[in-house]
Length: 383
Image 1 (tube, rainbow, N blue to C red):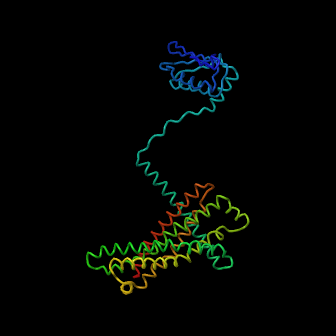
Image 2: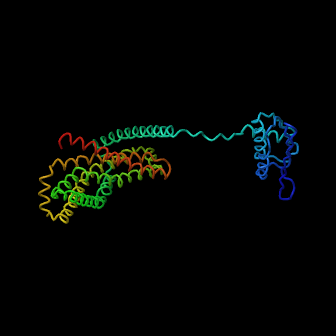
Image 3: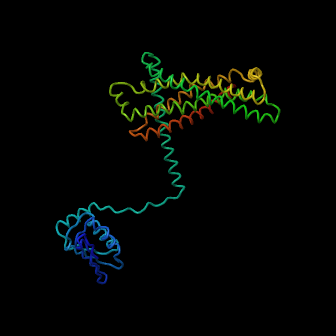
């Protein structure tokens, strides 16, 4: 077998001859990368069955590079895998040195990994996920302690609080959120009243739709809707803002000039959100009840005065406080998770998006879990 170059001359060739169990291979010409493809096909076509000894004659090699040396050594390895003795003869000192160098660096292709049973793969993934979750919970707990400490220091020395960022977050996270919080709360009240009236109409107890709307909005729906909106709006913004600062190395610059990133970036956001959430919740309660009143008036022809009278008899002041007491707790959790995930961002834009999404998911999850525990707690104490 011979490979022709562009001038029609033999660029690389290989002659194979069998003498019983002995295989003689004479190699010549240029064994370089430009001829390696066809030489590789020819070498793979060799019949190595029954070979107990292989001899390479390299005296006619005109040129050899690492690609050609790798082909020769691979063929040698194939013969040795069949328990054949192999001899390399006639190589020039330069070619022999190259073959020795390539042989030292030769890496065999590992066999494909063995497929494990699905139960082992599933168990491994669950274990790795559990370890990662525990590590994340530990880091979040550490961040919680650090944030509480710095917030307490800032409240003990109010002149350390940065008023400009604090006021900015009051505007952005509070006043700018009023339209979306009000609209969604109003619509939630409308939907709750419509569905409640539809079900209670079967028993002729449509008047109790007012009870469902008032209790549902004041105790659960108002605070939950507000917390979810704030988590998706402000919590994600906290992560994106701090994460972008980490990518731009602004956080490192703060530490270099002696500023505490927790005091500068976290404290204003946490305090602003803790202050705002009860106000947003109160606003959401009013809009939710207003939506329910509008829908009840349209579908059941119950006047606003009758609605307020029924709500007064059905709702105790503790129902109002149950929703309002949850607000600062949820606000602290949302701000904490948003800032924490922002500090976890690495030096890439993709990391900013991933941690922003993670912050929203974690915040909503923790808010709902806390809401469940607090609801049970308030029920046990008779609120």
